Image 1 (cartoon, one colour):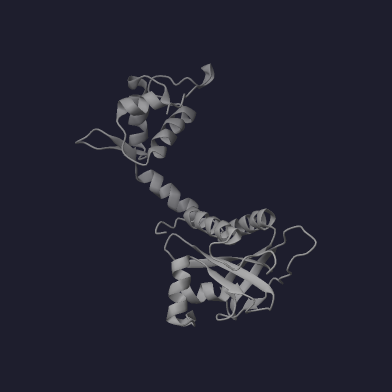
Image 2 (cartoon, rainbow, N blue to C red):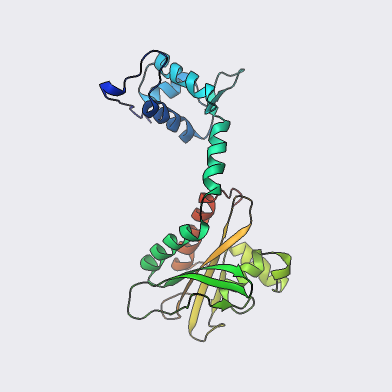
Length: 246
């Protein structure tokens, strides 16, 4: 894949003075590879001469953004990238990110979606997003959910601290194997719910996203369309928060 890096006359770098825009574009191409890359291959993908790409790489290496393997001469991202990523992750607000995802999911699936965290009284809804249709399930912000009978509570019981694990071991294993909890009319008759966990960079459970709806429209199955959409969103959120183990 070739990525042409272009710049205007005003952004043409002089000898020894790098264009930030072009340098970052070259770095972005390198970061996208996911592995070490040789100078010729990197220059080809960037659409520039080797000598020009080399000058950019020298400056990026001096700043810690790029490292070169002394044995293979291949280039890869440097420690400055890690430091920036950790700084960015430290400033993310999981609830804010989850709220945006919950709203989009509620609209796409057509069911109520809420964000829950572990509070003093158990799993607690902190953001509720309605699907925008007349018939939907109402959930109050501040509502708490039982660890045994609710999908949300089961997520925290399955992945939370030992003190909060109030589930039979077989059920806990099933939930963790599926990647989410499913409840069919157990918390409220005729109302189904599916809930999935979101993890941070340290692998800690930080919140859960839950879909809740009438049994006539929300399938109580881990393989259902809504459940799989929920699982995909939660996995994407976990990755955005730095989680790398799942």
